[in-house]
Image (tube, rainbow, N blue to C red; front, side):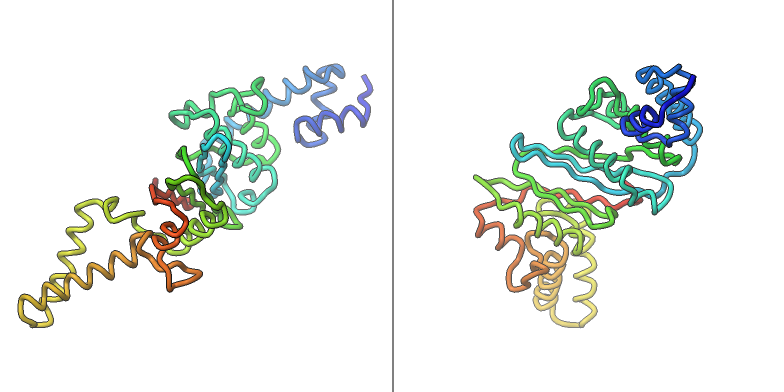
Length: 277
């Protein structure tokens, strides 16, 4: 039967599939739009399987926050190539899957991809991923995610390579302040939010190094202790978020900014594409 250009365009608008794929699906479905959509889904699923073993070493970080519900999620979505990581369809996919995590709270990646998609429950998350795989023809998958609740802030680098989500405690928080602090985290990469969050073995190792460096000066023991104490203070100021000088105004620490705003630091999460985690 003859398939009209209008029907092909309608199917493309609904699925984002290539024009020729849409025309072929409509022909096989004898013009039945719903059946054609199902045929495209089946084809995309096969494409997804065929590309599933290909390495997905590129990708982007996405963050979604719902201020009203005080819930958010940060997600690393992987693909095969750097250009695809910046492609419109993949960017939207990463953002949609981050929203899914925030609102539906999956326990694992396996559970996540099996969930009904929050914006279209007739599809699973895996169906949505498969649709984009069918358009772009690359392997893509969620790599990791974390969901937080409370007063949250976020920042993602313009290319999606690094993202941060921040959790604070207080009555209310200025989103721009939290965004600025998240930007600071992307730049300075602190070891931990607060001193008490640093693993004891890390502190012990740094203290051991500080004492060894101080002892090499040949100073008396009481002076050596003070030198080591000073070195540890410097280490904390360089590596603990609330003690770091703010990148936009080094006369203030991140802790000073939060205190002035009536906020308490709880935690931050920093994801970088490709890192172990």
